Length: 285
Image 1 (cartoon, rainbow, N blue to C red):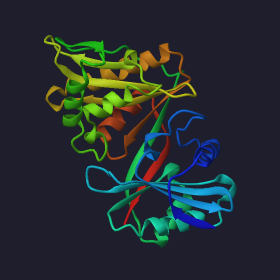
Image 2 (cartoon, rainbow, N blue to C red; image 1 turned 30 degrees about the vertical axis):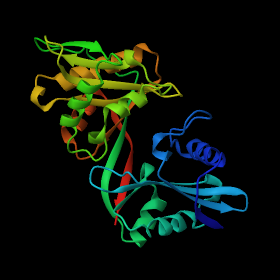
Image 3 (cartoon, one colour; image 1 turned 90 degrees about the vertical axis):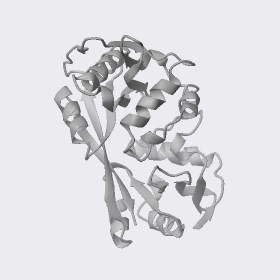
């Protein structure tokens, strides 16, 4: 087996699609751009002859706390052969703070982390809502109305609210106007599913950005409320308007990601009928 840092070829998509078939992740399609977590940065390839059997991506831009972010995938047909451990050992040679993601809290990843003294530092929950769960209608407090996002007009206001709402978050708080504009070019972007709560002066108080995946799964992509506007159920109302929209679109179910230690958000989602599907874990040395 050969492990080298180099740019990947089309065999990377083949590997990622095989992993998605086996694991349900990553969110990669048969064509079009790769998910953002695999773009740019550095690429570590494990090859057995001509076959790509393992891959690690290092996001060198990192998160808000200076950690470079590592995503690692081993082809399902080649697991249990030490490929993941070999990739991790090579990645750990990087002289920088690193966070390595284990999706679905995989036991093999936990074993590798324990052997290398990596600490479990973050848990990201994936929660699911079945379409059989009855949803109440959103209730808006006085002076607040909801409208949809207008590309070319609302980017800066939405980003400002996002920055205030997620100043504690390692990734979301880094969102820029350029990031939003770039996402508007993605195939899944739909301004009709991007809701803004505004006051009587059309000042943005909060937002709910929904997403529909290629398999027709809806997602509560991001819900953010300006801390100065919190209270009165604004976050719950924004969540509900997006959920009703996704069901009207005919999505088969709805998912969301939430930090395990964000207890207020977890509580709101559980009250609406979301249940835990699995946990993603970040390890750090």
